Amino acid sequence: MATDLSAEASAAAIKPVRQAPPSGSHGSSQVIRTGGAARIVIYLILALFCLYYLLPLYIMVVNSLKPLSEITAGGMMALPRDWTLSPWASAWSTAQIGVAATGLRPFFLNSILMVVPAVAISTVLGAMNGYVLTKWRFRGDTWVFGLLLFACFIPFQMVLIPMARMLGLVGLAGTVPGLIFVHLVYGIGFSTLYFRNYYQQFPTELVRAAQIDGAGFFTIFRRIMLPSSGPIAVVCVIWQFTNIWNDFLFGASFSDFDSQPMTVALNNLVQSSTGVKEYNVHFAGAIMAALPTLLVYIVAGRYFVRGLMAGSVKG
Amino acid sequence: MAQTTSGRGGSGGDWLRDALPRLVLSPSFAIVLIFVYGFILFTFVLSFTDSRILPSFGFVGWENYQKLFGLRAWGIAVKNLAIFGSLYIVICCAIGLLLAILLDQKIRAEGFIRTIYLYPMALSFIVTGTAWKWFLDPGIGLQAVVRSWGWESFTFDWIKNSEMAIYTIVIAAVWQTSGFVMAMFLAGLRGIDTEMMKAAQIDGASTFALYRRIVIPQLRPAFMSAFVVLAHMAIKSYDLVIALTGGGPGTATELPATFMYSYTFTRNQMGIGAASAVIMLMTIAAIMVPFIYSELREKK
Image 1: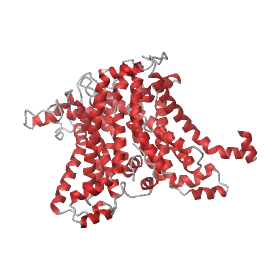
Image 2 (image 1 turned 90 degrees about the horizontal axis):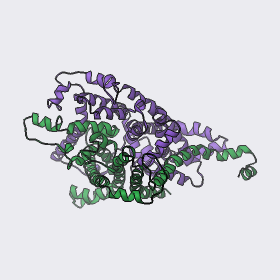
Image 3 (image 1 turned 135 degrees about the horizontal axis):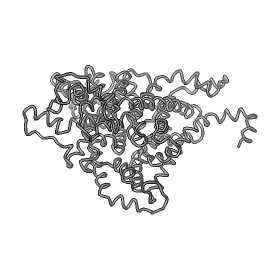
Image 4 (image 1 turned 45 degrees about the horizontal axis):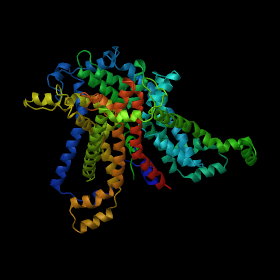
């Protein structure tokens, strides 16, 4: 995602707007009136696009609930005739992943073990960094921020080789802690960006006043900054969670069979060339890999969107 | 250093207080300096060496770059990126703009529709790839379904066709991202100055002319960010290709990102792999550096 550093736009992203993107009576719609027939066409087009976006989800769900024979007989679009949960059971605990018939369960756990610490640590570091970069400015801080920022956008192909070497040298190659470390390193840039843009809007006078009253660096952070950081912390956690859970490149590069995250295991399940292709099991597995991030999106959608927008939109 | 500060502040505590913010920032900065910039430098150096399975430091000058640009596989990957990247950006922007304009007409259930348009952004490209891989598969997917409905000669086998397979990557990638582009344009539309529109409407401008002449030009910043975001995603595209086509049929859908991976880790041509990564970085930097620079300057 690209960044937005301009004050107005980050204000739009961080103020407690009810909806993101903000909806309101202003904007072009205020001026243009559309007639009855035109409105029907508009609703029709919007509905068609709804179908388009929902189609893959529909296919995944219905085909994960039917026997394989119904799919191979050309019934991919149909509802199941024999509803069954066995593809789900198989994908979760018995499907062949690579060399072992373990199902996706161990890899789901790997992903959780990887995501939780990586998200927690990168968010805390991001908050501290954002606090320093906005309230304790020093010479060259813009440069420091610029360097952190550009790090968000490098193609990771550029660090794969040395990172593989380094993880091997320190004995973290092919382990979950190794993956945590990698995600932490490449997550700091974005978490710093979020908190920095958020804290920039926070009145510096409050910090100065607290300083005059004798409050120290950490006291100000704990008592003054943290209590108002809820929204941006949610945005940051959701962003990091989604990115790290969905990562494939690092997982594929730096994990062993035992430490594979969910995305890598799902890909192995789908691409395996041995035996019959169990499409229904693949779809069930795909939904399992999608569920955590989908749930987050459904429960906290507007924070998710706000994070996307804060990462990319110019007001 | 410590002397001058303690001379100024009078005690070690003051020195600590002065340095504390920078101390707090320094671990993150050090991590990024080493693992981003140090590693970039390392890969850059490797691209001038004879590294094969493992890094080695026999310098060979520009040889890897010469070999890289002589490779047919790299030529295919670059050409594919050009096709994929341009279609991906153009179609995403077109769909995004259309949906944003339509959604901006005081639509009932706007929030609900937006939620549907945007959910693909929450999915992993591996999930997206899996769903589209089987839906586009001629044996069981769309083609088989339409044939089972009675249109026996219906053919849609792009994913198995080396000429057309790259377009299936476009289809899946557009599905994933176009809703997000819609949200960017919608935010842009909501910030537009309505005075000019009112004036133009009084002058009798049609709705179409209104959008073409007044609204869309004002969306320039949104177009800029959409372009930067999409170009950046296109260049980094890796997961989707792996999940959807695995780079095939043959090498028909290889992109620079998949090329780099296979040359480095499976073909043991680390020097060439590093050179291809450098080219990717340069391309992204050419897009991102001016953007970041202008954003950082604007703020001041």
